[in-house]
Image (cartoon, rainbow, N blue to C red):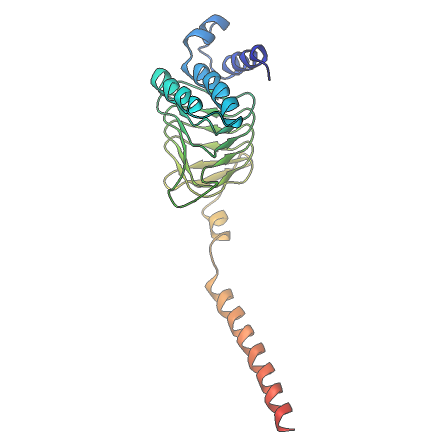
Length: 217
């Protein structure tokens, strides 16, 4: 995407998602989120071409100016919008789809346990509200809403709403999740595990008995 097309895309995203947006001039000159994304596009272009030092310098200088830290290695799609933005942190191996909106204080970070791909992959048309933390090499599906202050450490399917610490799904496709039925579906079943183990042991013993009978013959 060329510079002009990129600027048009950023302005369009701001107009669509920020009711306070007044004019193109105001968006281009006063929106720190727009400035951070422009700086990131430049830093990412240099990063992909293995230019040393300069991409990180641009990233840190942009952080100083905007309060938004985006590692040059992060992959960000079209229509990305950071509203307000102070305190936003996006890690090196983060991948962000199209039409994603982040609010202030959002972190797309690691847990310190992974190597290689250690930051989230975020789908298309996702909204991550103020102060939310999405941590680890997890996947956030398309059309997901993550509530303010949520801490998400597990992958989230498409079209879900997640709130709380730790993050839990409260809506699927706009419909409220009644009780904890959805979460129980994901819990281990100890009775089933015991039965499976017993069946495996019986199968093993039957095979051993057959071997013993053959040896006696």
